[in-house]
Amino acid sequence: MTINLPNFAGPLDLLLHLIKSQELDIYDIPIAKITKQYLDYLDQMQQLNLQLAGEYFVMASTLLRIKSQYLLPKNDFAQEEEDYEDPREELVEQLVQYSVFKKISAYLKVRSEDVPVLVAKEPSAAEKGQVQPLPYGQISASDLANSFALAMQRFKNRHPQEAKVSLTGRPIQELLNFLKEKLDQQGHASFFEISENMPSLADFVGLFMAMLELIKDKYLKVTQVRAFGDLEIEKIISDDK
Image (cartoon, rainbow, N blue to C red; front, side, top):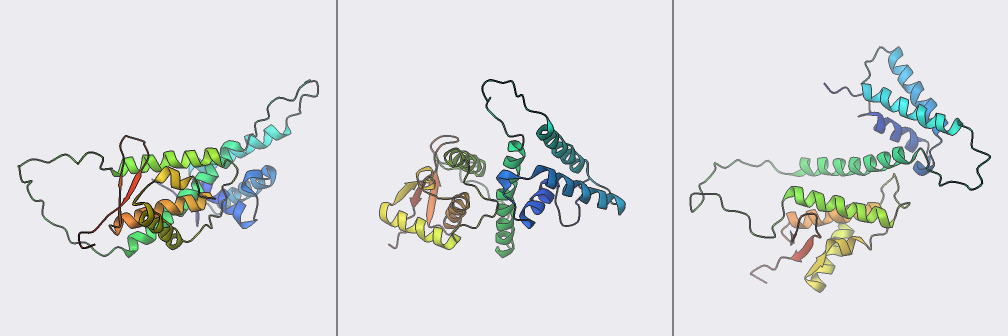
């Protein structure tokens, strides 16, 4: 059974709220301050006799472990400074990814509420009495998701310190017009190449959503030659044009 705290969907949601509400830099989290606030919040919940999911206590132990690493004395006898690995790095990466997918989830929820009610249709038999395979190059939903994940990883490798928690990029309508203008000029384009010119992670996610909108509107089609490969975007030319 899933247990949610009031207003929070899990420990990452609570941490993200503490960081955003105080306008802290997610890449330079004051770990001692955040750990104390997090533990104080759990203590208040226990005083109210609210049952807490185990994942909240796992996160508490993670924060205490990171805090303890900062308290360990440094080796003053080392002749050369070794490569320093920030103990917060893994936690920061989780928070950034959670923030991105939370924004995508909110957008998809709004889109699902706007979709009109559909009427079901009884299944009809194929012409030859059997299911025909999809045409070569047509992409499935899972392939599309895998390519998006790969493109996002490529973007993060090029801009390791440029992602922000508050994703306030260009409006999707602006990115829709950008894609249309690109396809009107060239007829086709590579999603990987276009996304390389996006200045921020917010614009990168917005570009992907704009592509999905144009697919839904039958303005363009997307194909993929191989699994986890590039997404080839092509403008659909109507018969009446």
